[in-house]
Image (cartoon, rainbow, N blue to C red):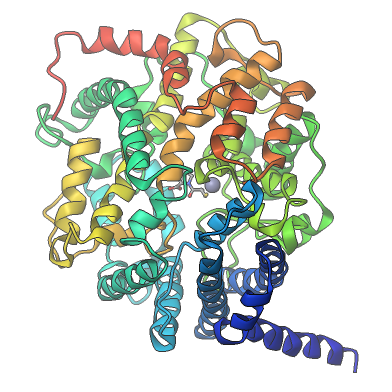
Amino acid sequence: MKKLPEIFTGVLLVVMISACSQPSSENAAMTETAEQFVERANTELDELSREIGAAEWVRSTYITQDTAIIAAAASEKYAKWHSGMVQLALAYDDQELSPETQRAINLLKLGTALPTPNDPAKRKELTLIATELKGMYGAGQYCRNDNDCISGSELEGLMQDTRDYDELEEYWTGWRTISPPMRDKYQRYVELVNEGAGELGYGDLGEMWRAGFDMSPAEFQGEAARLWEQVKPLYEELHCAVRVKLGEYYGEDKVPQDGPIPAHLLGNMWAQEWGFIYDIMEPYPGVSDLDVDSTLKTKDYSPQEMVRSAENFYVSLGMDRLPDTFWERSQFSKPQDREVVCHASAWGLDGGNDLRIKMCIKQTYDELRTIYHELGHNYYQAAYKDQPPLFQGSAHSGFHEAIGDTVTLSMTPDYLQEVGLVNSSEQSEQAIINRQMQMALDKIAFLPFGKLIDEWRWGVFSGEIVPEDYNKAWWEMRRKYQGIAPPSARSEENFDPGAKYHIPANVSYTRYFLARILQFQFQRSLCETAGHEGNLASCSIYGSKEAGGKFFAMMASGQSEPWQDALEKLTGTREMDATAIIDYFAPLMRYLKEQNAGRSCGW
Ligand code: X8Z
Ligand code: ZN
């Protein structure tokens, strides 16, 4: 008996939502002012988000045929509502609206990463394809035979630790067996999302994604290119030094010194962050080895204890402890009995009251930093939860990714020592260079990767890259930007982009590129607020309520104002700018230039 009201609520919800789809709402548009329309959009969005959130959570933590149907149905319902509302919003196009109402309507138009065609059959087809692609990635495995399969997260670990050329090649190639079956679906998804984006008034989905930055899509493309030019010299020095060391390690026959680096030797499945080959790159061997991994293992940290450590950092900035439900509902470890999406994510369900992370935490420093990153999302979600639903989001997508990363910049040797994660923190010049190398292998190595993922997709969505060239174009960009090449010939039989989570999961990626640059800007100004003196790299804002307050105030405005305003409040400038990351790594760049002197760099 107790269950009955709940079931009824569900039915009422369906009725209410279908009542706000296109035809029946046309009447409402004629009688609704823009303000009333926005208010209704906020109320309905709030309701719908709960339903979608629940379906998506279950799908991501329990991959089966059934959860695919549930998640695709929820996504379809949202898509239908969204298309209907965007069409109604057209009625306000020529009206003079308050900036707040205008912004809410603009955000509503951009309010989906997966625009679907209005045709019901196509909408259904697309939401199912999108759900399936993500599931195929999550359930992906490399099988040597029926009884010998390795999951994606295990393979990631093997890529980090293995130093045998051929074995690495096997894992690298093995993981890429998951994606050829995605190719046809992806091609169809591209057709359908572009049709959906077209109906919303955009040339293609890439243009729609680029429209989400409070400037024209063309201006944004220019901004991203400008930032890349600023940081490119840093990457080129790092690439040069890494190629030499890998040549010494594996032999110059395997790593030719005048060409791209083989993509499987960089300690990461996608060659996106290279921190795991620090053992090969360490400038001053043995100096100040910040071995957090061994502390985690010796002290046998549980996943929850690792998450506590991250939470404590945010609490030290004056933020609240995470709610009990966070601890009860999050997925911290990989379940043994079912397929899940292990790729880390942070969830702000129930309008930001029900925070969760979903990870398959391993006992490594790398994973610890990912936890700090994910909690940055959760604290942002908590900060903007009192905004109306249409403003519950980050100033731009790069801001969401930059919060937790900014916090990881404060994981200095002193901080790590203070919280018992390392025993000593040496401050010699050699120690500083070693630490900067460790960080650059992650932060600098990532930049071209962060840039090219969407460059490829922008080309795919615009039709500049045709399906027959998907893989070829992918490797051309990997070579051009990153200076890497596959270990063996690839062809259009392969679909290597599909072996990177964000492609099948339809998550835009320029956000990470922007975040890599923004986080240093954020850190520079937060360190000033915290009263830090000395070089930026030695600053930790741990314990600074002043810095925390400023950070939180920026986060609390959500996406209620253009990101330039949010950036200005935090940093005093309205432009994204790479000078902070350049200043940060100045000592390492001096070292690398010395090392590379006389070498012929480039590929
Ligand atoms: O996807 C992520 C986070 C979740 S938002 C773990 N990142 C990118 C990736 O893994 O490719 C963080 C760094 C870049
Ligand atoms: Zn993230």
